[in-house]
Image (cartoon, rainbow, N blue to C red; front, side):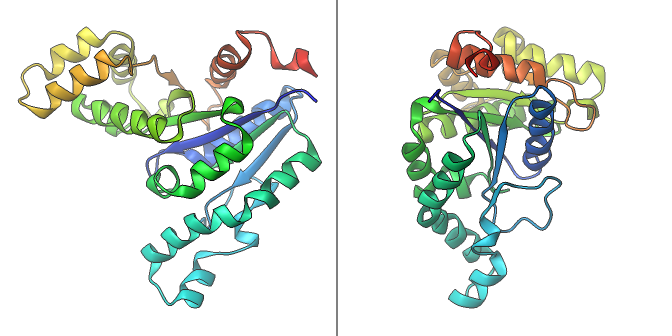
Length: 253
């Protein structure tokens, strides 16, 4: 059996993870690439796609709040941890359907996934060598140098925690004025331009910049729009480059 690719869509709340999952799965489907979607957010009120596996079929935030007598925040944490008890069922469903691509739509608050043990259990069970993270940069936060730098740091922390490669994506790029879009992309490809912007800042921002640059953690952003449906070819190509050195995944099936 050929190896499949597991894509974890990660990002801060409001960065567009769920709609990215829908749009990317639709794009893959149009390309005749077999895709399987997994919703890992028990607190999702609405999904614009039909998840092939949905943790809400096992537990919801309301269920958890009632059973454990906790508030919404406590329920989110318990829900994140409960995912670890369903890893075998998730993998069984994936194996039964045998897709090429599996896209995981992670909880709204990224720390509920990246900082909880369930994420490591799931990634390890799937096999880290087959997993990749697509990290979504919020376009509004990305517009300021300090905001952009913070997102690079957050993406890097998720990479360190999960120990899998990642593809950085500028989400909702269609909402940005052209000059802002070009500026953000340039920051991701030319760190000297970013340094010029933050050089007047004191202390931590400069130290963080040097730390991230010396560690080689800046990567070119891929602008994507889930509503205008652009950028997904580039995301797909980036994933191919990581796993197959550019050879088209379709050729393996």
